[in-house]
Structure formats: structure tokens, C-alpha cells
Amino acid sequence: MSLISCDTFQIVASPTSVCCSLLQELLPYDYDLESIIDDWVLMGFLVGNDFIPHLPDLHIATSALPFLYRTYMQVMPALDGYLNEGGVINLKRFQAFLEGIASVSYL
Image 1 (cartoon, rainbow, N blue to C red):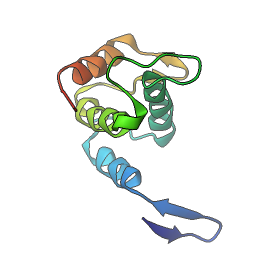
Image 2 (spheres, one colour):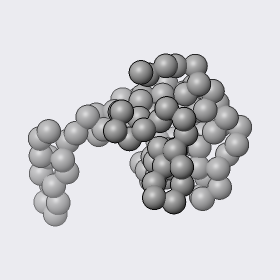
Image 3 (cartoon, rainbow, N blue to C red):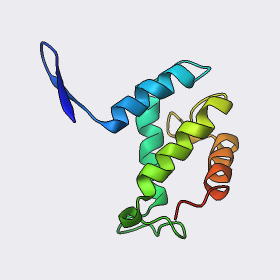
Image 4 (spheres, rainbow, N blue to C red):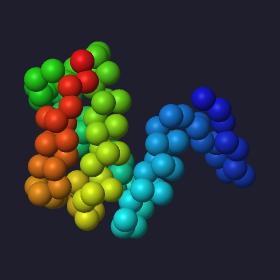
């Protein structure tokens, strides 16, 4: 990782930020970082937490989050918008994302 300095803050350049740059080039609709973050939070629920069980075979300890994000990057250019729209899950798009997860074995 490296630091990118600006006048008022520093950004840590990580593989995720590189992926966001790549996604920005691939999307056929307006790139919106806030929507990507909302989608990332939604993906986090798929690996579970103390209150929500995880999906089968999606464990945070077995690289589930990178797998979900790779799948997200593959699926999103074919969709017409983000998974989460202002706090409401677009079920058609979310289904396409889940189908993308189901079509790949990451183990």
C-alpha cells in the first residue's frame, strides 16, 4: 500500500482503491463511490456477523470478501445500476449478483 497526499487528507492506495478505479472505467452508468460503499456494506452482510448467519461457504476467514468483490466487479458492468439504491435493495440486480456468486467456486 502507498499513501496519496492531498492538501487536507491522505488516502491509502490499496488494492480496493485500484479496483474502484478499474470499476469506474467498466461501468456503463455514472460511477458513484457512495453507492459502491453501500453495496460493499451489503456484501458484508453475506459473510455474516454476530447477529446474522453467513451464507454457506462464505466465511470471512476463507477470503469471502475478496471473492465477493471480484464477483461484484464482474457482474456490475452488465447491470443498469447499483445493488443498493438509497437503502433499498434492487432485487433484480441483487439476484444477478447472487447468480454470479453461485456460478463460481472460490475454494
